[in-house]
Length: 295
Image 1 (tube, rainbow, N blue to C red):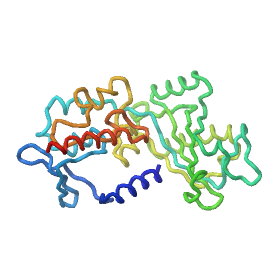
Image 2: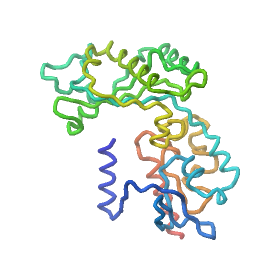
Image 3: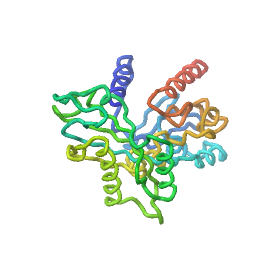
Image 4: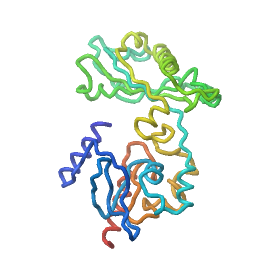
């Protein structure tokens, strides 16, 4: 995904775009006439523009960055009521060798095989296992047998790790935002859950635990704190029927425009949602191009 972002950025700069990183936006700037005129950065500098496209979540865009007096009260209320629950804990792992799955053993040389270069799902052989894992989280407990999606990006891009080593991405479910009894996640809880995930992988690929040289555990609160994902939700808000299509992010505002002229939503919180497909961004750009012709 990092390579994809770099490719998009390279294409944009080749067409004249300027990209500034490490520049935190503090607020959307609005003219006295009630129209967007740019953004104010955290360092106090201003970037003027007739339009602003936000790839941040609807909550950050409309509840944090946009002056509330320029948005209808009903719109603000709807945004604040979005369902952002997410049961995902992300674990990034560094290993000194590829996982050796019982179902498809490694070659003597240990080079990546086709199954290393795709997404592998574990602990989901039947729907009962998935349901039991979900029920644990409903009770405020991390799943005893978590559903695991395992990807090895370095099997396709060897520049991501030293020779012979690999990085593994684990997308795991289900973990509640708040644990039973209102308890917050701490280091003990994080590591206990990660150990449980590794035990499960070990059953499919013996020797996995012994190959681990580092790990990074991101629970839903961590994903929210570090990446500004409401509820830790990578889609910005739940991909449920009441928050899809004409109702994403809220009814009457699924066209990427918002009640404040010149401000557009183009991220996962806009139609058709997330998933590293870029559809929301492309659709929003086409809407902006049309609107610019009439400005």
